[in-house]
Amino acid sequence: LEVANDEQKAILNEVMLQNPSDKVEQVLAIFKACQVDSWANELKEKYYQDAMFHLDEIAVLSTRKEQLKLLAQFLIQRE
Image (cartoon, rainbow, N blue to C red; front, side):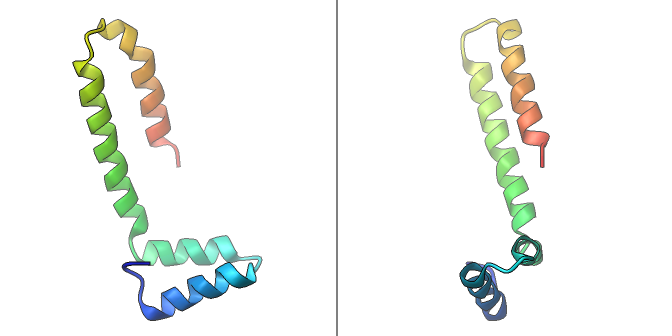
């Protein structure tokens, strides 16, 4: 809501109150118009990189970390 304009905020409030059948599509359209998806992807990548850094800092054999890294990679790539 911080970056949405007044019209978008009104639509979001209306959609949340009325629960129309195309609620998801309307909200996603507003999110994309406000570039929430790109902001979330940037934040996701930052947290992933931070996590991988801290995982690498743990004093455990890297082969034992491999499955956790694969799981993290899988989770980060899903939509």
